Image (cartoon, rainbow, N blue to C red; front, side):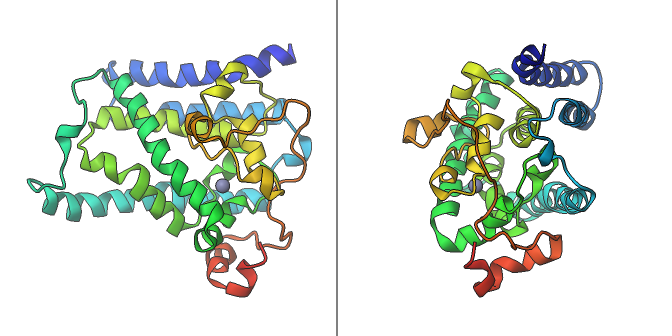
Length: 290
Ligand SMILES: [Zn+2]
């Protein structure tokens, strides 16, 4: 029974999310309701599954973890992207309209929405792959990215732990180009539903087996290695939504004979609180210890 749950949870919850999004969008609900409802329901199911079918009991979140994770989720994952989108809408888009920077002709707007969303996933992941790789290999960016690697356990709520400066960089790579390409709200919404539910799964503490999907999706079994304390294991599996670019560039890593050991940074006393983590990348002595 446990094996069946491990193999079917991801495809079932993801299908439920995407189908309910489609159904609500075509059933008279607003695009916001049709987008956020499946994401919230997905998060709820994943929370219950983490408690009932934990991959590791010691990875279950404590109250202090959740408090900081919630601050990250609200400020960095919800409010900051809205602020950046608003800034782009009122400044960039207005001044760029009718200029050569609006390159709407390059995007296949006539394709079905799901094909456009797939193309967007591949293209956004290509850009994010290089940003992520650089964030591990170039010290100034690693200082920021270390915040994301600071937890010693993985569970879905800590997927939102990113330094706001890094989140703004991600926005430039995985949102701005697509806004400038004039991609429709419907495609962006479909992308968001997939990106969110997949992100929750990627960090989740549920016993899952994705099977052949581990060659397409950047899921939890692959991503746990990316959070390994050992640099040689962590500097792999950079994929955000898919693992395709890791396959192409030779950084996919999924040993069959063992599980990942300790997670997090070498520096075991790296601060865990929100305010301290905002400051740490700029405190050189401390950040150099990661
Ligand atoms: Zn990373």
